[in-house]
Length: 326
Image 1 (cartoon, helix red, strand yellow):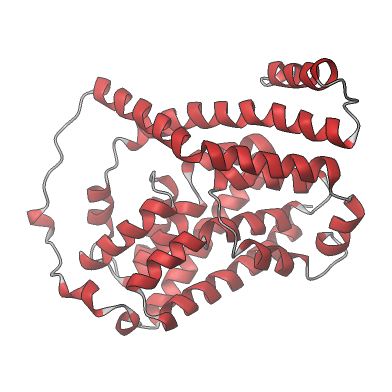
Image 2: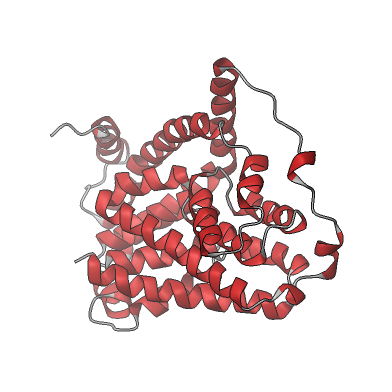
């Protein structure tokens, strides 16, 4: 079978053996091979996929997203928000400002939370990276459970009627009616391609350092982390492995493109794929910068409830992953 990334593998092997003079099976040689192979592979995938996704997403603006979500108070609203979060180009850094904008525009609290969870966790670009690393079955399960978690968490928060736990200034702005929305001008195909190119470059500029750091950590795990130790703490025989992985992931911060190389290395070391995917969800859905921004608009009780419900949900999803991905 043709390996699309064989040139990267060949080049990495040459660097390790002939430039550094190392045995590729040694811990350092293995780590360096992982690093020099994964860096060009992941960055190439990131640029190509983000260009394609950027072109497709040029048909869906934030104003259209807001319009779709307005006046959606039922479970259907949460489902729509979760699905829109999965296909819109907004990571946690931009999803939080949109979260605030949706609330001030009159989008229900629970529906808005569904969008907030889904947008950074089931990122369209990262889904293709996930597919290239772990295959179609794991990717589809990740999408299904990621969107499902966003829907259930948002629906639960919406049913609890916790608008009083949102800071008062959020609701002082009168909702902007759909009739008053500025209609975005029609853009040409050339402009869509230019926008896709711009988005792919901006994504690369904003995440390349996280990707390289993530690959470096993954390379260290790949070459030096004792397999026995990983299996002891997060292997199949430890019934608390998912809980440990999620609690470790919650306080960390990186985007999903940065955490996937770490996930790849952990799987190679024998950690169950379901446990690794739950770790990935925890890192992306509950990032520290996102929580800091949310603290400005959510009262402590609602912020704590959001973190607790999402964490419990990810733990549950992790165990389901391990049951299904055998």
